[in-house]
Length: 556
Image (cartoon, rainbow, N blue to C red; front, side):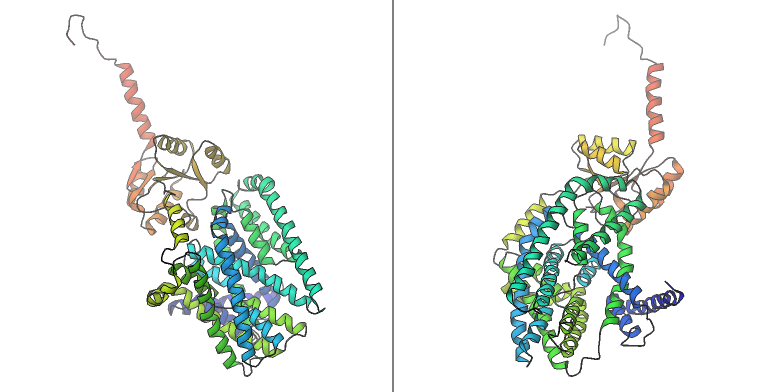
């Protein structure tokens, strides 16, 4: 990278920080501010930054990291539970939007091929934007968040199929299209088989070896995610699909929470460039007289797409609230929609007016849907009385999920640090019937204790993002046997920020450390060295001064 791109990057980051600060002060979404920076600094605005290749590269890595983290949060058990509704909702929404959108665009006076292109483009929602918003709201692990991610992945696969199918139309005819789809299906089967073998025989031992170093584990995760993203693109899928599968392949390992927590900051930084790049690529020169059609199609996407999702989920046995919150995630079109229409221009299928229309719909729907998702719970509160039609009298599927979750009891005690003292403590508590969850960053120790039947998670107790993954609530006791004062101090501060400091027990070396922990809010302090010495002294005294036996004539 030359000096000029470096300076441009520095300028771009400075502008973004300033605009982001203003947006935060005005309580506006930072995501909208980032896109606005891209528009203002890009070709459509002041043309302040020309390092487009560098920004695009960082944006692509950011997307790969994001989709890797999405895959990391899914495991096979979860896929079995939400797979049917995600598939049905994703395919149903695609069919509804294409059919109704095609008719609507024809009614606006467009040709059939342009109507087909724009209708297909309207079906694609932005996985990147939605996942970022749900993550910021801490709703990615909620029921509606997981279902939304499921049908967004279905959409991503549909993007690949649509692009390959429309490309085949250049050669004309059904045989080419059928051959393309058959080839894609073959690649999916091969990719599934390869991923299964990796997950079964290679990845567990490989990740365990990498986990011996925190830095190495992070580097391996990034390399694995970007590597499979590149491989996915080479194999004819997409970088997004490859990165998602990379995360999914590690989702069943005990290291996923630690990996996810360490990659969160990197994800947020790199996604900044994605949103800036998205804003910079918006082409406003082709808008022309597309205002009225864009308004009509934007209303169709903002209202029609959520309605079909709510209808499908309601029919499948989910509550109206779950359907509404999941439905809002498809109330916008994706950056891939613009790419898809641009591909049609390159193939000679459509003209620039289709791209202008899609661009304007994208700007409107991305901006408005962002606010809809941020204020989704308030919107639901206002609209709830009119949503009864989208809920069965008995939402059986969601009730079944709640029953299974209720059977998953939260731990009574969480022990951070499973050295000799912590492991012994966790083992004794478990032997007495107490539900214990251990947290340890030594992968060998984790495997050893898990083999003994102790519930242990691999992770760092000082990592705020990792703590969010733990099943902590105000009724849970937390015990820190971490070896150094700084670690326990950081843990206490993080627990206090979550309102959980009232039931914490910390192991201290001496009274001075104990006073520090008490000042930080620890409810109890244990002194294992002092207590062990007192215990040993009591036994020695008993041995040194054995009790006097009574005389033979004395009564007992």
